[in-house]
Image (cartoon, rainbow, N blue to C red; front, side, top):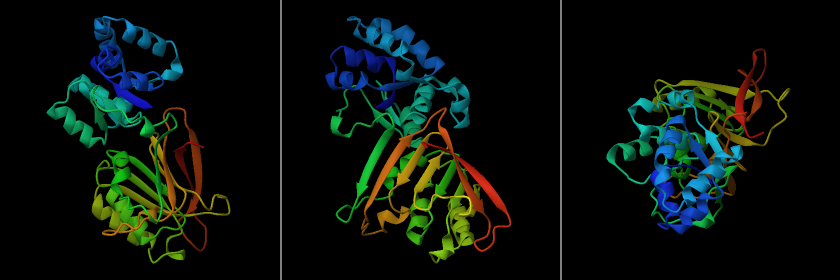
Length: 305
């Protein structure tokens, strides 16, 4: 599991408040900042049993167990550490899997957690081990003809994102409707790139696609391209890249949810991958014309592969 967790919650977990949280913490990868480290140093010493101190020392001694989030990353997504330590915890959770354990909930924290699409928990929250996120795949959904999932199951991951790259060769009207819904809470100045064959397989043109997205995000930079299969061999994958934070993969098209009000899902395995610093870069060869490729470009996206 990937999470950010405050010092008080760590002490509570190891003092018997919630043994399930203690069990969940032991294999987890923790997001930290300079401010969070200071917070740990000043408060973990209150742990009377010493178990929290021992656990934290083991975490610090194993670089694979923690993820340092720097101030540049926080500031890029509008997090200002000077506004309080709670903002650092929110920012750390946002770039590290979207789960935050906080000992106390208060109005400003709840507002920020909602703004950034976080799952906010307290030390007393019930831990469902059957649904705990992993280190690589932080969320997974299996859609089929018996399910009725809506777009909102993945919408939180788009909150406040500033760079969205979508690759789906067969981009349909229901695919665009999905995108219209999930980008509502993305950053106002978000850059959105859609790579598809558009009118070759659909009634949608790239101009109509850009126009509809612009109505949702008037300040956004929106670009639509055709895949250049003279250079691009990947004809079947469907991906959404969210900066260097996350990558959503779809085993079938983005239209898998169906449409309101029935939400008749089709067969699709959706996986949300954690990316983070040092992830690979995926290169999409594209052109601005479906027929001829006089103008060719390369779109680089942070990627799991």
